[in-house]
Image (tube, rainbow, N blue to C red):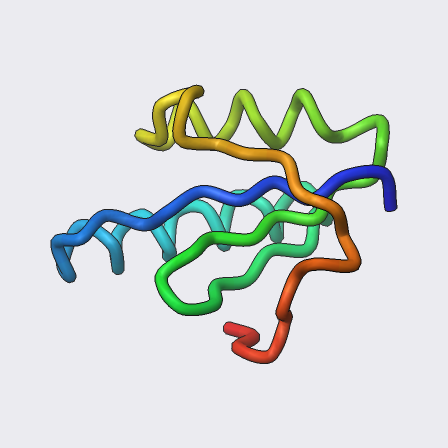
Length: 81
């Protein structure tokens, strides 16, 4: 895995649930692993899917500035949804 994308879910519970459901569903359709942990959306695209995943997150309401790239070894994946 080349990179992991993270974005903070909305502080509003209803909005966060909507964001979570939309992104997890959309990523699942594309075969891209996604989960949440402590209010953070975690998306694990393959190298060739990074831009596609980032573009989809922006279309679903995340600002490009809110999406960060992190080292895969630093991600805690204990809260699978």
